[in-house]
Length: 259
Image (cartoon, rainbow, N blue to C red; front, top):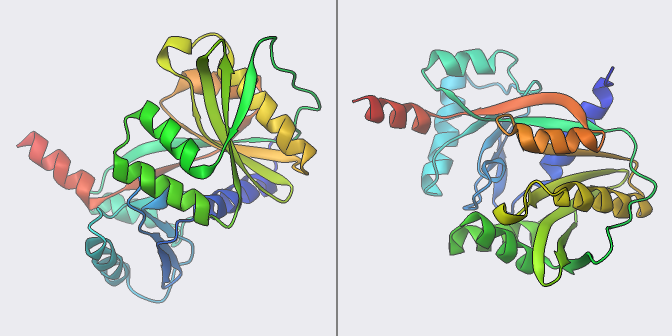
């Protein structure tokens, strides 16, 4: 059975690795205000219950998000405070969205050779943000914010692109903090999917991180992405916990659609 300590280390490491320059604490809640695409860099992480009533705390956070011209999102995890936060936000009519599973790996591969003809190239933060942003259809502003966040991260990122015969097979990056490493932004071009490229890339990245001192790993994957989950399960990752977001913006959009 998965030890709770590894799940908690994964949560803390994920918070550290996703820190944007635009963040601050409000009554023990960590608010992040990056204009990037990833919700984890533009949301509230409710790390402590604080002393303010919930509505007042949410109002203070809402003012910060409005000033940044961003919709307010609360990331809800098993560690969120107060402990009944999810139920209280649901009672406000804020629906849950964008559920993701955190998966963990207790031991990294000792070897991971790439198939013949495949070459792994390293990329700096701007280069990787440009590559994966183009593949995902991100805007110029989102790509710029992604690069900014990685360059300013307290946990260094290393980006990689897997090539063969002049074709991009897959790309991904990792952020290592001491003995734990996180895989981020793994992407396979549509025409290359189903051929094991993401598996080969991730295995190689985990091995590289292991040579640098990592002993265990984590990642975040959409709860509605069984294909990626199967790839990570083949690598040995197992489910640790699930998180999701709640937002008044989602509730308003749902109401407008219904109308």
